[in-house]
Image (cartoon, rainbow, N blue to C red; front, side):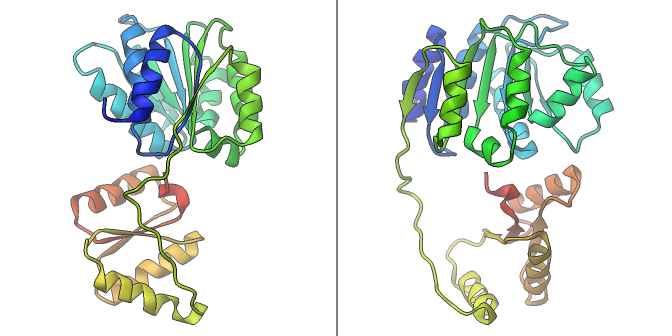
Length: 277
């Protein structure tokens, strides 16, 4: 185990205790809960759902589900991602095939619970991943609604980059004698700098930064969807291969944009904070 969060959390999760973990994104926390949960899952051709991972965005749902499936490749344990923006009919078909682990955004999960296409009666493990982000997005009431349907005998883990008071209140109300793992160190691999400039000079300086960067692939974050599209168009006019990702795109369009960026087909990804995590 290369990551401190894994060394600290995995033994606790294996013991069956509730865990509150504070760690930055990209510090190996998915494995910190996925690996011990997978050792406790019982395979069954028709389910039932035994573990539920709640996440704030569809992108994270896909990412976490992919990690589970990678770890469980030869076990027969099935994990699916449930999120808005994808056909609910397609999700019905996946669920009918039987699944042990569901990674879901709160809103779409509630849709399934209300339609009885997902039953939470047999869930023994719950993970609230990036809980502070779910708080920012207004999902706390949805989380409380979902936890109401799950047995009090469950094991609950909460992972968050920050621990605002509301998150701690949820932990106190819905977790039992939770052990805290606080590893919120600064990431030494990230160098930060900023420029104080006039609004009219922003694009010129952005172009200079892009031109002089050592590594070709770059993500540019913009405040709004409209600004994202305008920036990408201006960059393309300047001969830079750029693509956008924002909330108005369909899931298929987002996946295409991310795949092009990952493969290096485009140099610049201009995004709203939908891609921040």
